[in-house]
Length: 238
Length: 238
DNA sequence: CAGTGGTCTAGACCACGCA
DNA sequence: GCGTGGTCTAGACCACTGA
Image (cartoon, rainbow over all chains, first blue to last red; front, side, top):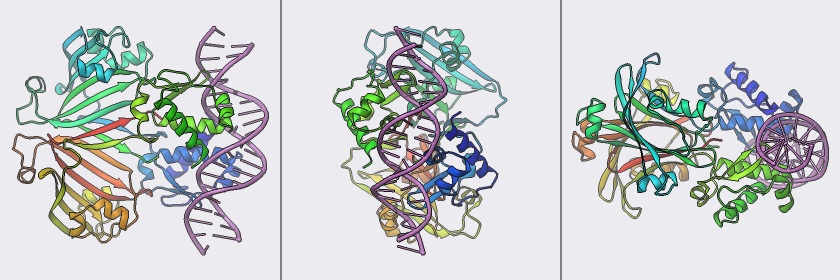
């Protein structure tokens, strides 16, 4: 692990254990450089990491200060960027099941081609899948993925975990995505599978996932039961 | 403007004008350093900026490459982090109006105290405000702000723009926030003011805004008409 | 093993905050 | 004007990729 990350971890621990307290000014970079027997540039890189993680802020000409809400973030490992999470209102131990409703290969429609940057002749997997937690359905997925990018999807994979398959079998990792979130009325299919009334809203999430290379690999529209799912977004200034 | 930002802008322009094309490998850092008559560290900082902006990715031992979807991002000025946006399904020229429904000062309840990190005796502004675009109501805000942090809010300010007042009059800028998004059924108040039926869902956004210092300054719950608002989230790996 | 990016240093100068 | 963070350099060494 590079030195600047190690130093960042140590300073994070000091925040956690109240060696540095909320609102407090840190020692200046020169002093920290001496303490950690390193150069000032390396200290700055460590502080930059902590800033991106939302633990402190820096004012040129003045110093670095611990944020008021730093303790909320300092618990987990240092993580730059944003946490984007889907929270289900059910305990963690509950059983998670999938039920595949449709699974085919076909050609993409216009919207799918545009979002996935593929042409008319590029075959895609298409599946509809119901996700069930503790015996209760909570979301209905409509997913499209180019066949040539994500090889070997089977109904068996869909019954287990697509992301696990992609990560562990194909060795592909992706985190970049673009999501649009809406409230909408349930479709007829939603009403059947999500066991919801015509008056129950659904949370609709339209999502495109990208590889590191910027290649789109998945386009999906997911409908969530309104009483079981909410989405959390944390936005940090960088 | 620092040199590394200038270089980043130039490279971005080269991507925009197809001097460097999608999927292409960039010249190595040493070569770029010579071209821009600078050190390799500065080139790396420029590339880091472009990586954070989602225009390219880097593989240690191999090189830097333009992302497949770089052109989508390269249009706007370089912006690290995420775009989080609220999109209204109405053209930009439309008239924007506010209607204040409630405006008082009071003490915070338990949830508000927890989110705003204040105690029982700290007075807060509370207002309910309807937002109207082109004569049509599209969202209903419930907002709480500590009085000592955001001084001088008046009904006049609420009728104009709160954020503009805070930015221009108080000189406070904030972008850090934490949002929870849900679909929910409309309340009685929603039905009246948003002009929606009992069967029309609303998009509920619960939001806490923070100052640079990590001090929470605003806690709000906003209900949006489902057919006029959607939220966009772009998540980049850093 | 050659090419390339990631890290690190010591020192310099500049820009900004603050008294 | 002093203290502080931001930028920049030239060179070094290490870690990784890929032929």
